[in-house]
Image (tube, rainbow, N blue to C red):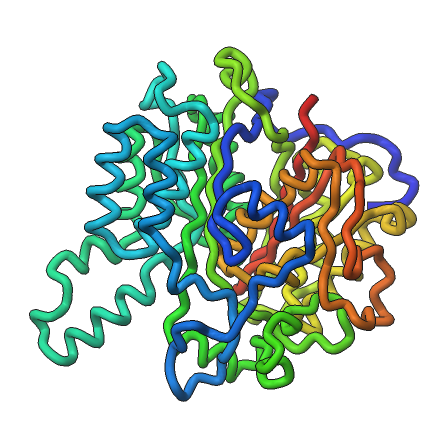
Length: 438
């Protein structure tokens, strides 16, 4: 995109406008929107030593650990805000499901309740359900494989069904009583943006009125964690005794990402449908750009990343000068952060100096397939509160990064239009654009 391009792009999609009407989140920094927002605004870190170490010999010692997440407390809080019949269905299915499915159900129910669709006279066959990511049950499967090795009959009898992401989707649709399109999307760390793009298509082109998008926990097995450590992608050793300092995007001492657990859900709707029922509107989704590097190596590439940001602007019909803030993918790796920063400078030119850019993974860690949607919730909360969160642990910014990365402090800041970047293993790149709805 050239600096002298002053015209607005024309949207490629239909004229239906899409808005966010419901949200929920579970993270190490809170499992309510208020607690999540307050923790991020205060610059807290959700990183610690693993409370339930994955394996004595693993190189991975630190992360965003939710292995002790109190499901009973979450269920109790939901019982106060949903109809009794929905709670009964939820309690039955959560108690008989893998942990990741149970948390996914809770996220879905909370977002649906937040949207006001529970109890509404909505058409259940016109509400879609989409899950982001294919890594819901790796730990569940691993534990069953271990049991199988001891005695084949010790493995759970319904393992073959419950290990599929379609089981989590089916449970969620059953609890909420919705019957529209249902499927899951892959995309690794870009899964949330890809699922949102699919949900938008369900509304614009496939007669859905609304769509529920859920990003469940992406739980890594000990073998996967150890593999990532051996590949040199994880932060190791340097900050093991100070885990809250380990995730440090844009800092010159960054040495790898910090894996974390978390999940989120969004309810999106066609604008007229939301207005007819008097729904609260959080923000408008303008469009999602998507491309790939075209080869297996997961190393970030500047050209495709710059292009996907340009594609998102074109998809959204938004001029680059209208973007106020970028929520960077920025995982705290040496190459990734620098490549993304260069791509931002390249796409936005002189305007890049007027952008606020932050890296939420500095506080949350990298929630992998759930990261894009969890951070999307944070983007909306910043927009609504007219603030921008800090990027913590920037003790000395990389001298090659010349952006306002909100180093160690947030601020009051009105966001009218933002971009959320998310890049996945396998060279999958995405960028989503949101706009303030007024």
